[in-house]
Amino acid sequence: MLLTTDILLEYEETVSWHMGAETARNILEGFQRVDNVGHIEKYFYWNLITSDPDDDKFVDCAVAGNVDFW
Image 1: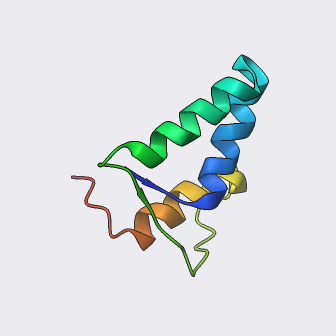
Image 2: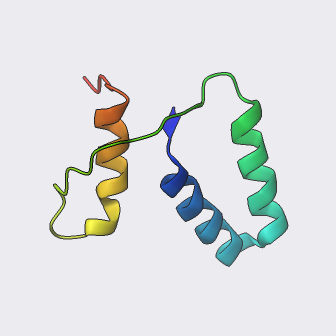
């Protein structure tokens, strides 16, 4: 699983809203401890999702991480 800073921030916001800040902190710390989670820096914004531009962060992460989704 690949994550970027903006994805982590969205996860933190969403989990905090629904389950509280402490749970969000625990989940984010868990992401740091798991071997199959990587953090990448993206350097280009593709702007491909016109219906909900906030979701572009997931496409950008996949492209930057050279993800094979087949």
